[in-house]
Length: 244
Image (cartoon, rainbow, N blue to C red; front, side, top):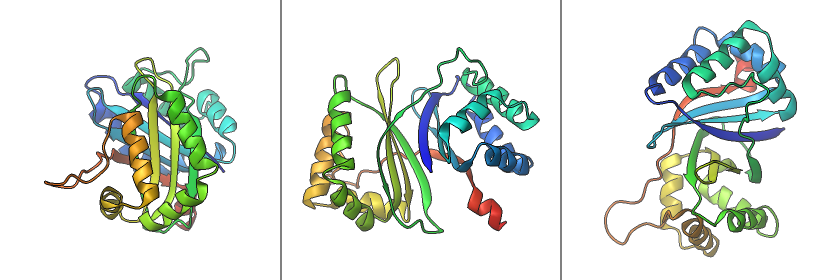
């Protein structure tokens, strides 16, 4: 199973419409959505809205073949797929059916997987990388995927991460780091990471501060830091549909 995540700015004033599209896909058109994703070989799909100066739509897919999924999303003439493309175009201005459109294609830099609990919560964030830090961040994530993968696996166990993935997306105003995770307890995960003085966690927080400017350590006084996770608006996966 392959995975990808990408983010697109929502056009001004259309954030509520974005929520309504997801609500319709998960509501009265859920069976059409499920059939569409089955044909795309998509096993899991999540969407979020992240509040920023310009609100962002974040989309995450897992598919048997991402190439097949992307091509079908762009070319399918099924009524639901055509409707879904039209809605995305309306809220983001991106026409997924236009071959000349440059659809975001982030690099998958690092992934860690474990046993997925039934109650795991999908969370995602997008943070801009500081100017000039893209290549260092890329090397850092390759280090996590390679020589330090065992330490990352250990962190996942300690933090209750069923899955975590990091993607690097190029953007005109600066490159973006997208983080996706399936978390057993979101609050406890953030709290534990913020308070941890484990050597690997400390190193990880130092790198995040260097590349993003965000300090994930707990302050000496005041409340614990809380990473602003995006608002989950669409939650679909094949296993759930099969069980239903």
